[in-house]
Image (cartoon, rainbow, N blue to C red; front, side):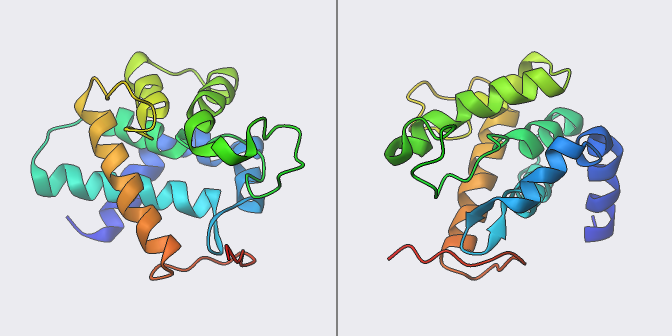
Length: 164
C-alpha cells in the first residue's frame, strides 16, 4: 500500500477528529523535540496502519486510526511544570493516558476498542497490558514514532524543547 492510501484511510476514519477545533489545538502543544502532539498522533496512526499491513495483524482500521489519533489527547503542555492540568508533572507518562481518555470520551463517541487503545498505549507504564491487537499495534507504533522524534530523526514544525 502506498503512503497516499494511508492518508485516504486516515481521513476516511478520522475526519471528525481531525476537523474538530479542540483536536486542532494539539498543533500548539509540543510532544517530542519540535513535533506537535497533532503531528505525532497523525504519525502514530499512519505507522499503526503500516505495521498492521506489514505484520498482517488484521486490526480494525477504524478503531486503529481513531485510537491512535486520540492516544495523546491530554490537551496541555506536559513540559510546563506549572500548568494546572499537568497534575503530576514528573509522572506525565503514567497519568496522561487517563486524561486523554477522559477528554476523548467527552469530545467523541468512542467504542470499547478505541478506549482500550488510549488507556493502554503507554504499556508497560500502565501495568495492565493491552487486551486487543489494536492497542498492541498503537502502543508499538507510538514507541517507534516517539523514538524517532526524541532522537530527532523525525522533525516537526513547532518550537524546539531542549531536554537537557
